[in-house]
Length: 115
Image 1: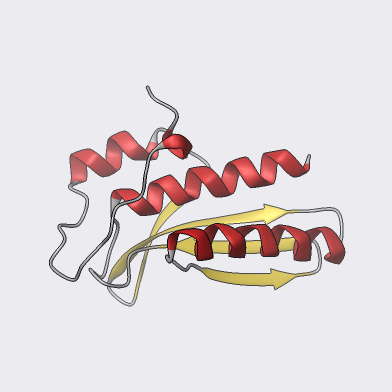
Image 2 (image 1 turned 90 degrees about the vertical axis):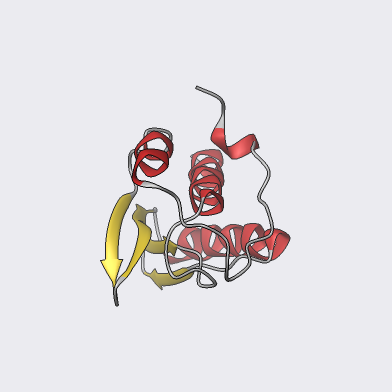
């Protein structure tokens, strides 16, 4: 399987197709620590990251923010002492797109780089 974090994100318009069940199953294999949740009727990728303290959690939050800005694709980020929860989904289409899995993989890489 290819390294998902190296894949390009594509522009996602309101008429872009959501990831099919088969695509989600395949892509999810590359980001197994992420949970697929349904929130307000829309599927999202969600993961809770645990860090040493608030400063490290804030540093990680900023790294995720940089990823989001670079792709103009923005997650929900919840910052607590030693914890950061991240949820990726494509607001434009109301569900999951390949881009969400790519950014989840990049988020994992940013977290692993902090270790």
